[in-house]
Amino acid sequence: MAKKDEWLGDVQLDADADEGEGEDDGQDWGDWNADQEEEGDDLDSNILCLFCCSIFNSSSALFHHCRSIHYFDFRAITKTLALDFYASFKLINYVRSQVAENICWSCRHTCQSKQDLQNHLHETFSLEDTIFPWADDKYLKPFMQEDPLLYSFGEYYESEDEDTTAKIAVSSHGKSKDKHWEICSAKAAVTNEIKNVNKNYFGSYSSFAIHREMISDKVRTDAYRQAILNNPSLLHGAAVLDVGCGTGILSLFAAQAGASSVIAVEASEKMASVATEIAKNNGLLWSGSPNNRISQCTGVIRVVQGMVEELDNSIDIQPHSIDVLLSEWMGYCLLYESMLSSVLFVRDRWLKPGGAIIPDTATMFVAGFGRGGTSIPFWENVYGFNMSCIGKELVEDAAGVPFVDVVDSQDIVTNTVVLQSFDLLKMIPDEMDFSSRIELEPQLDNPTNCTRDSFSKTTWCYGVVLWFETGFTSRFCKEMPIVLSTSPYAPKTHWSQTILTFKEPIAIASALAKLDFDRLAAVGTESCPAVKIHSRISIARAASQHRCIDISLEIAVIGPDGLKRSWPAQIFNLA
Image 1 (cartoon, one colour):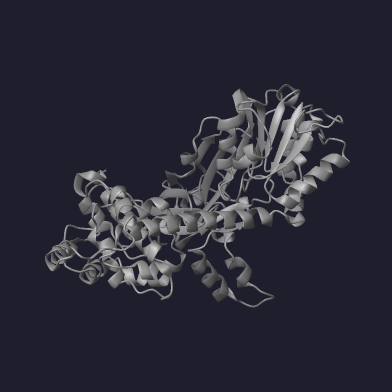
Image 2 (tube, rainbow, N blue to C red):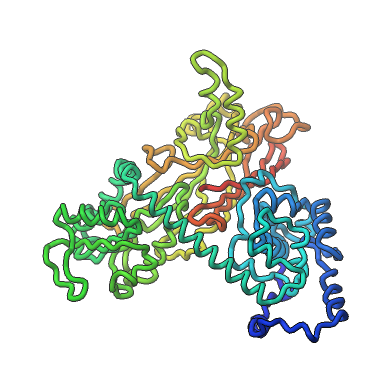
């Protein structure tokens, strides 16, 4: 990949200049002269295109070129997504950073060269559902040194709110202190937004209905109960830390298994209070003094209210003093809610060398699903009436939205492959964002007893379904390893599965099929079914929505004669 400084130069903000200009609040214009301003205007007139080497004398001309040639409509994007000045400023830096690495700004596909990228650029689909990867603070820093577009696009940019301070700050001759103020204000806004999201997120767990649903999930709760109670060498006499304890059910199991101490951390103020009362009512609450740690009862559970990242503010706990790190952190599609990062934070700060994490592995799987995994069959016969038009429309709409629902194993029409595996003892937080290539093949009705009819059968794949397993492996659970599965082939759980629907269904058939296919027909149609589905699935923590995840789905199919057909990338936001 091309490095930034190979063709755009290093990025640098002149902090010293900011400080110097900030000292002169009076803004002495006495030494101003027109020649200097004209020189500055000349610099601003040399604006480099976002995607190629073309130079323009105004932002309007540049954006017209980008819209006509590179499918990048700046005005439409900023207006449709209601981007304010800060977001638009970051969008420009984000696009430049992606182009420098030969990455498509829209679907994030990585190309082999600049020319490949030029050929790949395409219109943005479902703009309203577009994720905001440029929301990261780092894009407030100009990617290209002295980029004149950043200080002239304000003339082209039309804000809906004329009274915002961001609008006032827009100026092609703005001072460095204005830029510094913008950056600081944006950072504060992002920090406040994250705090608000966390507040709403933890507040949502104050509902008893959510906890009843989780505890009633027999697959989930029994897996943890068996792993904790049936592995005495793991828990007996251990110092345990439970991340996100909720009602405290896992902490109660740990105390029952003989843990010497259990620190149960819960961010929701209401649920922390409830967990405390539950532990007390069951005679398991530790009620010693925080100062002298003299226990007044036999209980071992201590409930601490707050986020684990701020645990030091609530309790004195020595680094690397925990024997067992316990947490039920999994969300929909495994990574939704981004709670895994909190588990890794605790691991790095408080887990002893050689300490255990329960569970200690997680694996994501993917398979193709058929017509039965959609709502089409339901609408085909509603009390004897055909309402299939509704089902077809719902399937079309589903191409932009991920669904969490139960998929019957009978509706899986391809083989199952591993999408990604995590070792919680070794992984780093950045590994939560990943991209994996997979290959799916049609699944015969009965692979162990195939007939000529099953080989020749053509079926339709409507999308892919994702699920996960977490492992309580023999690395720590030596007496009884456990696997918690959310597979369509296993008893259903409250996590269900995550469904990603294709823009159009794909006809598939076994490579062993003796079919007469139309060589002129498009691959993936009934006349020329695909024998393989190639896909690249990328999952990343959403930059614009804290605790949500973005999923990119790229699909290509291979025909019986080796011909290939591909579709534009689909972007799903699991929020």
